[in-house]
Amino acid sequence: MLGMKIVILLALFAIVVVLASAGVFMLRRPGSDGAQHKRMARALALRVGLSITLFLLVLLAWQMGWIEPRGIPLGR
Image (cartoon, rainbow, N blue to C red; front, side):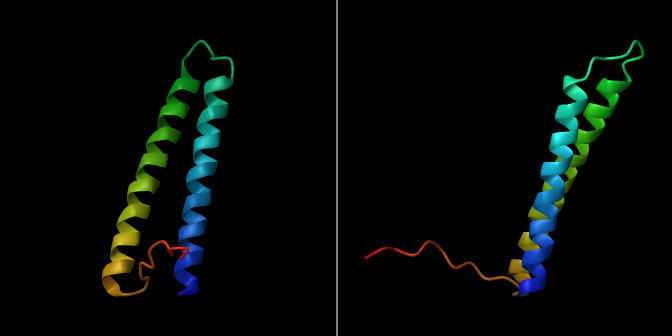
């Protein structure tokens, strides 16, 4: 189903964007209050939450029959 593929691609894109933002927070010079560390930790926690949600969504879509595993074609 094309709609499910788009949802999965958007979720993967969001995971990469949040990971990149955590990297930016890590590379910036920290302030005296440590706000950068909190923002980086929050971004990484969001990435983990998005990854778990995506995994559960893929399992649900497979169980409901919205997506089907095709496997790797053998080149014989």
